[in-house]
Image 1 (spheres, rainbow, N blue to C red):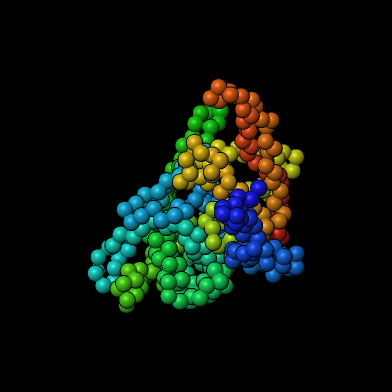
Image 2: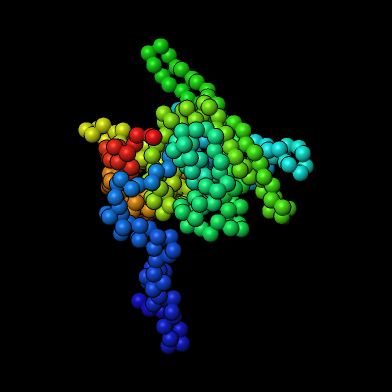
Length: 347
């Protein structure tokens, strides 16, 4: 019912937020998702350009947001996997001393790593010259003009990533007992740094990097192919990129006759950095938005959300009220990967 004041109907009672959204139309991100989904059926599988992510980083992730200049350590626990990232230092060409860099974070960090992996795999070499290729990558995948702040932000993430140290802990149980292993995953062994002439930018960036041989050899064995066009469309969201990489690594490995159930608590543990576990509803709402974006691109993914359990009658404040029970989680089914398996061969 419309509210009236002095005989006039208040505009807020007519134009609801939902109606206003319809009037304005889709946002730039929504339109990009719509356009990409519309052209997907016409994509030639043989023409798919591939990016790559290491399988370990399809299960545990970098920070979504900037943890701040004072934060030099980041850690995540995902079941029996413990990831710790330590911010490193780089030699400053003008100050002639090592300077502290921050932790890698956000979608650009993930995209830069996928690009580095792509270069290493295509060239079959751990030695990578990134300057020119990074400019083309920013234009092609991020759809940004590779000038000014756009390229500076990307190069800043490249520097942070190059200097960072990663420690990975794994625990497994077997008949003999519990086995705990610790691994050190240094992505970049050496890098040459350029410093911009404009001191206000305060950004160091590598122009040439050498991947560590351990990482390079592991990447050749454990690289997960990703559809570059899908990644480009999802490049606005670190969470969407992580969900996409996780599903690309996970779904095709699920037995066809044995779907995998993932509880919301487990999903929060894997993706819920920054969300209070006591407010699972907030995390669930954000995750479902990102998952919906992913599924507009990864159409072969077969996922269902468990239907809500029947509501229960409780007493609250002396009154009986019906309380909706939250959905339990997601069920994952065997699905074709976003890059056809016949294109999985790394060459």
